[in-house]
Image (cartoon, rainbow, N blue to C red; front, side, top):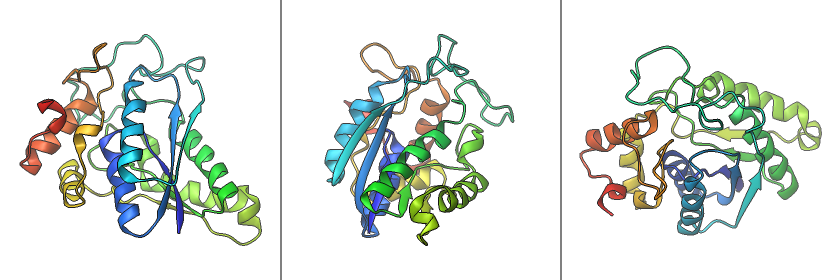
Length: 223
């Protein structure tokens, strides 16, 4: 019952990991330093990993800044107060990020004998990222079974996405049921030097709407 969870330090990955733990999995957390402008989230990932009592917490550096293509890894402006109903993929999309991250998680899972990966992707309250959709997850599961020694030898990998059909409010409610402290998390794409959320990027807006719809205050803003 070991699982590798991609732990960013954000609200969603924290909740997804906690759900997996409640389901009986022993968690091994993987956090990626990818050159993100909101690297403050890595510190939050450490807090969250301790709160979850993970078996191991690995931090890997895979610098995606030379590739570019995203306002999270370049000097491009992070969009603020964007229409979240728009169908265009925003500049905060990091090319192939979840493919890269899941590949790293898959490699570690094979080493420790785990066949379960956990990721906090969401297909409802999200910013239009193609690698957060169910069809992406299904395709990666199929890839994992043919791309690894474990798969060739008969193992079957499963990617757990417990939040994929939940609203942000539902995610928050579930996390509170599990006793999570969301004050440990970080969501903002473009925080101030002190780490204060901007309040206007997609992630901040979705987080604020989620707490409002859940009828609770965001503890991060009360500190």
